[in-house]
Length: 396
Ligand SMILES: Cc1ncc(COP(=O)(O)O)c(C=O)c1O
Image (cartoon, rainbow, N blue to C red):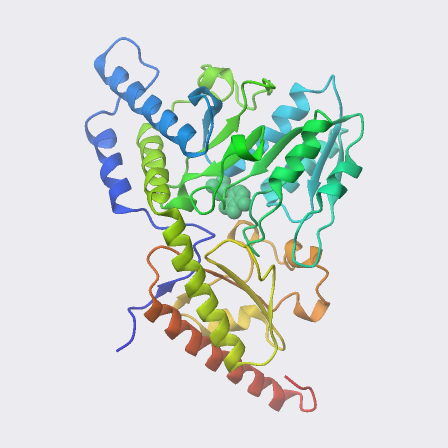
């Protein structure tokens, strides 16, 4: 019989909504639909109370000391833009330089490019062969006009986890703010803004079995207090930092999603890592020319990324119709170029289009992983055989 198809293995792109999250959100669609900024009636008060409860819960969930440090946004894309542009404009008197890495999400990299067009300087640090940033490189890149360093917590393609605590120490010594895009980290691996020493952090609900279209930016209020320039002007919501009517049901779902994720985060992480290792072992045993991308050691538990010698990832995806996989990151899949992350690792050209990202998540079972392992081995063998017929003499 086998598992039910199709199988979803793209949990870095997004995750399904947890039914418990849906239940928590429902009353705020159907009954308590007030505007959280309406102060003259009970509908507004209930909505506001729900938002403030969610804010407290989310703050506690990421180790923030004060719920007011949570600013709701539409997601990590907006949070990243608010952090980078907000700091660049807000701290214009103090400097004009930003340090980031070559493997950030486009929400960070393209915001940096936009800032460069407005006269800011940006340093994009190289990473090592598994994608890690060296804190010493961060230290060297900082100059007296640097206002912000932005380094993602965990990479959405290759799962590498950055040494944020060490980078934070470097930034503290030099009085430079540190932002982290934590979209892939929050709810999946230990993440505590105080322990890590972060000043700004972006995260999204839909990466943790919550709803799409809501996220937050953590903005430190003490030691130091950070003043960002808002991107959106309007009714003055979120203490003036992000105007716009709050999506109360989404915010309630966001908080519930993080609570659920944190209940069994470490147990679930161990389960996902063991499924991931099982799948890699099957591929390595069944095929030659499987190259693990990113670190073998600590990485996002549900993340597997491999380059398959001699095949194009897109061909594999066509053959694997019953499985949702990715050849890059959904965030940049509108672009035809090979992944900027794989390029930054210094992979040879022939491998740049052979990268396959497998994102294992909460609903996946051992049966599914075993089925996908078998199918992948079979598909890659067939593609290589067909290739060998077309161009004999080329091995693999
Ligand atoms: C690391 C990272 N940053 C930012 C984003 C953008 O998040 P959103 O689409 O919720 O704005 C994503 C995923 O899409 C991501 O993986």
